[in-house]
Length: 92
Image: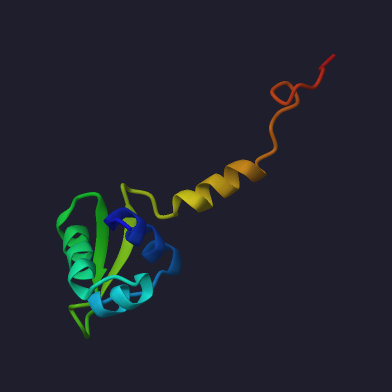
């Protein structure tokens, strides 16, 4: 598991996460989960907000400027109907 994968899951759920909650959900140590949160807070790749009532909780808003996960984007691409010309159909 990496910071990016944790952030992808966090953006999917839309929830606030503490190091303890991340550790429990991803079956890692709290120290590792705390490291992920620290990286997310410091890195320009991740736009995050901290919970007003508990500053130890973090929510991921965007990753590299995108608000949706890669899986969601790939799913939409697979559902997109390709033009007949690209799908191997004959046009007259």
